[in-house]
Image 1 (spheres, rainbow, N blue to C red):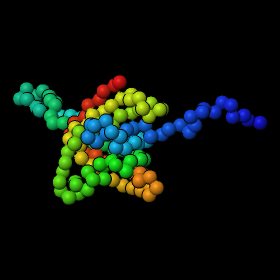
Image 2 (cartoon, rainbow, N blue to C red):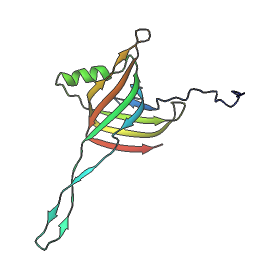
Image 3 (cartoon, rainbow, N blue to C red):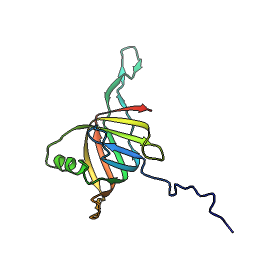
Image 4 (cartoon, helix red, strand yellow):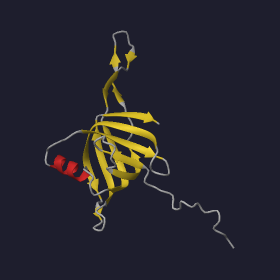
Length: 151
């Protein structure tokens, strides 16, 4: 017969470890289970000189498309108003941070700073009338630049 003595007291293990801060004010505007697209790239182009040499110098930065999945958004989060303003052709680009936290959800391990971001997609939103929080399946942000800082 199996015993439960070995089960961790913090069960279940927290899954929402990515914290979104939209305005950089230190407030949690959403927590998410996964993030993709945190990659910066530079386009290259091919240049052939008259001697037959081929050079590939760097070109412009590639745009970013960052996807946050399976999240919880507090009732006072500016995410919904921000998305609505973009849908009204009032693009309000903001600097955001996404922080990977430890199991407690408090201590930051890695922070990505996203420059000139704006939301382009919000899907699967469900609101809870008892506490005002909402869950979202996916939020997609378009951005210009990305920087990473390890704590």
